[in-house]
Image 1 (tube, helix red, strand yellow):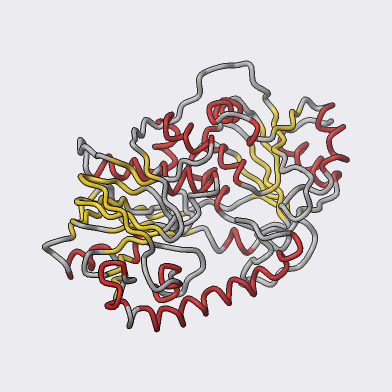
Image 2 (tube, rainbow, N blue to C red):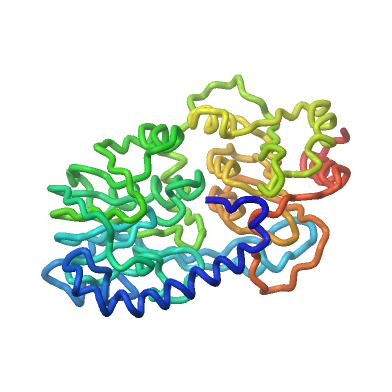
Length: 402
């Protein structure tokens, strides 16, 4: 959830305090866990699911899926050229895919902490943002796992950090993981799915992807237990958008073929300050309209309409944001221009474009210096770039005057 505008400049401080409080609370709550019986927090952790299965062979099983993916990305065109965020993110290795099975397993919170009946946290399937170790995991912020609800039968969990309130994370960290489950446990019948479904787009994506319920809503201070808990691995944990995930989404969520959609899209984030909006959007609009661009707010469209719009686009322009996740569905030859503040340049959407093998991606960053290697903490900073720079870049991409 976004911080109020007046508090956004202090986000880096809040993040550091959150990690420190979790670390300190965990030192106490792990030692007092025995006082709360099965509701007590995990007392130990393992870094990998394979290690979890090795430590608890009678309870935990790893069902292997697809192989590890080694990624070597091409150089990116953009301004300023060779931005350090993009040059530093050209190579990655995504671990092999699998589904973790735990007899009597537990899933806690909307961040999806996976634990065993012996109070072991499986850190590999419980990842969270910006942690340096499992001891900083937010599951340790409270003395217990909260309300515990038992669900009989075989239960699949697709919840994880960010998926409860963000379109990008829901698509890549929840929906795409259903593909991991299918390849590692093909034909397995499930009795319920733990997955966020409170919003319209979440319900629509679940239905379009053919993920049948009943769906169980994860929430803070609540834990689900199951006779047989299944947790697919999280290939997008480092926002790598591996080809396996991108390909699965493109096939699973096809466009309707409706050709009555605009060919040129400008994806807006509105005009509220402190939301990563493009500040000069109003000044750019006359040129956009003259050159047949349509300003689109993905949040006002159904998921199928979003897929159809992007599947029919020849060029997409917009500030960095979750709405651009839909470039996943762009056709071969499509061009994408992503706009950034100098204080927050992000690899996630470029990685999607690279994985499609068919999108010409470029970036344009606002003026300003940000030291190479220093964390990009301006998450909510608005994007301010003179319209002339945006127009010049678009012209170079489409190869026409305008």
